[in-house]
Image 1 (cartoon, rainbow, N blue to C red):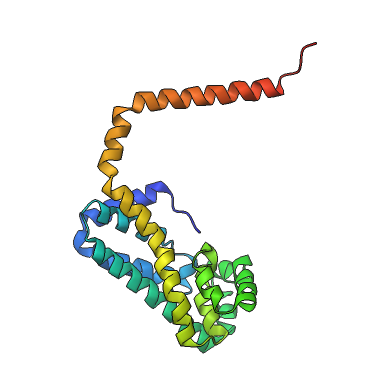
Image 2: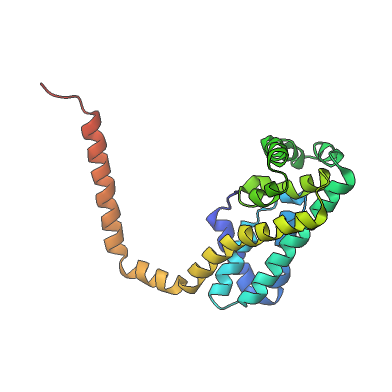
Length: 217
């Protein structure tokens, strides 16, 4: 799994909320390019999944619309990657290795781990990769490269997409629904929260000092 800094998530959430008429198209394209090789190597899906789900939870976007565009984009991207891998085979990754930025990621440990996982697990690797973060970047193309039957690919990839993207949607939607309550509670009890954190830090520091202090005879 890759990580997006909170500031970027905040900016994206604000931008999508202010331009809700364009938000669904942006979310679709974000999910598509996050799963389409080679852009899957550099586009961070969380930058679209989490803001979309947050805004759905807050009632700014329609939750069914967000689900539809994120899943449609993700599935189309993975399917396009499968057919690119099937058409070009291993030469696809050899070609990508010569690209700036992408080349470093196309043939790093993630690629080799993906090959090993596919050779060991076969079709199941298509599903597992969706839950292992970086391997999901290359696995659909590898399925095509290894000429996995397309119907089998769909059978394992579709639930993988549903769970892989769904985990971000569930978390984002939950926080979006209760965002106002969370902010109000944090504001109301901010003094108590800060005092508790300070006490915990002080206790941890005292314990650490006691453990390291030389024993007096």
